Image (tube, rainbow, N blue to C red):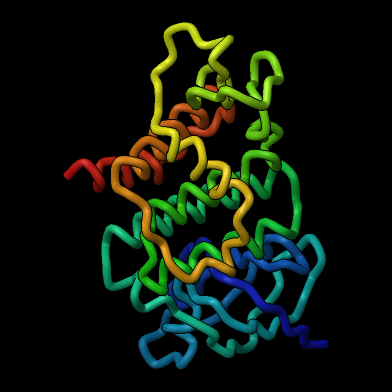
Length: 243
């Protein structure tokens, strides 16, 4: 029996001369391994439809805990805007690797929705760094290291917040402040917005570059200190941003 499943190809591996095995990220089944027979042949109509980051409806012979077999694909989106820009591809590679690693730890289906919502916004030409940071923040609870953004992380005080500190793990109030780097009040405000905003509802982004940089610096430090994730795709993305 053929099963129809929505998903996005996150990894691909050649198999033999003309076939490949792809990893399909889905909401219903998590990450599925699919055998795609003959699709690497130049004459195959499925060649373009089985490339990495293809998002569509996949018609498969589903086999639980085994390789399922791909029969056909109806394309939803191939993310042409992203694929035309090497920097955007670097962002997508990083978000894909990050999402897969987070999913392996918690198997929560909401990650599929968050990931696709973020990728769609990047495809719509919204700031890829802001969207990436929003996703990074939203993934933290699923890694078991969620942020406290309602009060001082050190004493619980909800007033007189003066900075945001990665080493402390969140907001720091005036009474607890020692020698932490002081960030802009707007950064304190905006990171909370990042954390709680519904990605699909974002229609416009207008954030000062200095605020974007402060938030990104905090998230980068926080991930290094608390998540234990060291991804090659993140290192490559950072090199691209440094060029």
